[in-house]
Length: 59
Image (cartoon, rainbow, N blue to C red):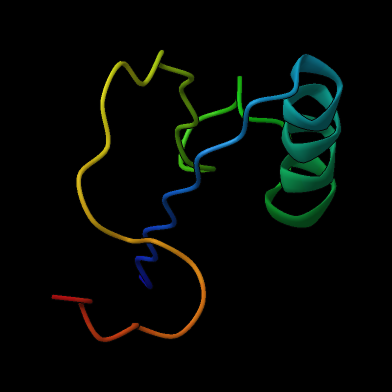
């Protein structure tokens, strides 16, 4: 049995719905045994992970 973990932060409800639908097209009906688990949580705070290149601090 293979295990994969994917984390994503999505701030658009329509994108969340499309992500759930796409996931089920790939792995199968998540209501069936042994297909996986997908859950949606609110993200109240993120530290780090900024996009783009790091910039030198001015000072």
